[in-house]
Length: 436
Image (cartoon, rainbow, N blue to C red; front, side, top):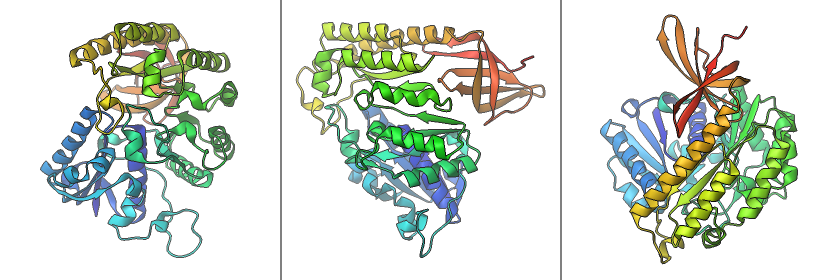
């Protein structure tokens, strides 16, 4: 059977379809690049914003238009709106999040334990090395799911409702996934989860235990972490970065720089605590990149509170950030709050915050002009017979482009960073690979 896999949304969704691909391949099936080639399309949906939900529906309709034999739909939007998902053209199966890990086994009518690497009896399929997904999702980095669900109750968040209670993948399972990725040639492993920083709480462990074990038990060249909630960390956590294989990039969601808005969001931090955490990270990790998320136009956000957020963003000197226009999600506490901000005001505040992030991002990038950095090349396009246009990332999440005489996809090269290019908010560094 030929399988097409597609996703929208977070890195966790990406990690999940990579796992599905390995399981389908282990069972003897082929992963294809487009829906028109597929007997079955699997779409992993998102509903973090109304736009993400709309995009998810668009992905499903597109797969149907292109002639996928049948369509299985999973993910957060499908979990919260299963009847709407089932009504879309071509959809034959809707799989809720709590059943997502068994999707491949269910589709193929196999026991879930068939894919369990720790199983010692009965039928078990040997895990295969990781291969990049064909088509648009081909990546050099491997996204590995180590945690799912969330026990926080941030008032704006629908994901916690869609994903259920927090739960951790045991260390042996994570190590098996990391080793499969490395066997497939991966140079960078990215650990993902809904609430990654809570990993281990149900196992009487801490995330630092998982990181220390991966670094000790594997030879991964790079280990990167996805989003971490700031209240899960302390200053001692950053001593792990004495191992240079840990990527010097921390994504620490802020959501607001106003103490009052943070309280209404039910975030477990304050601007003061957040600032102290950033200071500790920067003291322990030289040149660390710190990025964040901020919501513009949360219910009741006054002009004064917005100014507090803007000022705080500027003071923190982030290396970049994502700004989300507040989107009311049915079923969340924030959707029922008074003081809903007019959409035009939300968009105006979004634009102001994006400009502030663009300025701080370029300031951070400029620090590295003239330096030689290691770059993992993630994409390549042939310019002509004499050269290839490469694009990739440093360990501290600087986006770099360079022209090389040969295709260097999935290779790590030392690159001299020579110039800034692109527009504010979408800038990158140009590199020179021809080092003497």
